[in-house]
Image (cartoon, rainbow, N blue to C red; front, side):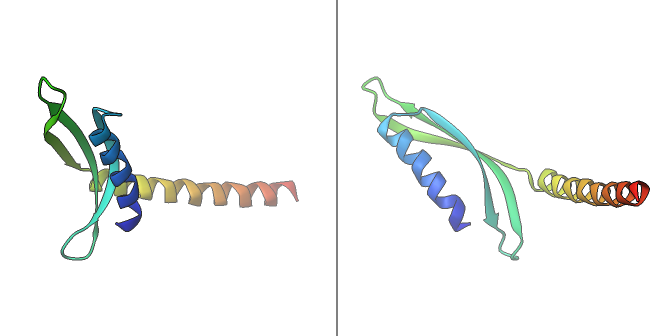
Length: 93
């Protein structure tokens, strides 16, 4: 997604400038069917003896199931909190 791109470009530029030798971030991509795919992307560099980057190593892990479970859990917690808050208000009155 566009809002993820700026952070990714910043981290990639830090790699190229030698400020980092790796980074990891959560990102979102649009699947060709239109739904969002959540991933963890790890990127590192391999340098030659002169310290120049010769290639990048990418590892991408699909964490969509985990993210959807987190969303459901947060919704359940919010629902339970609303019920408890309402119950507390009734009990106090």
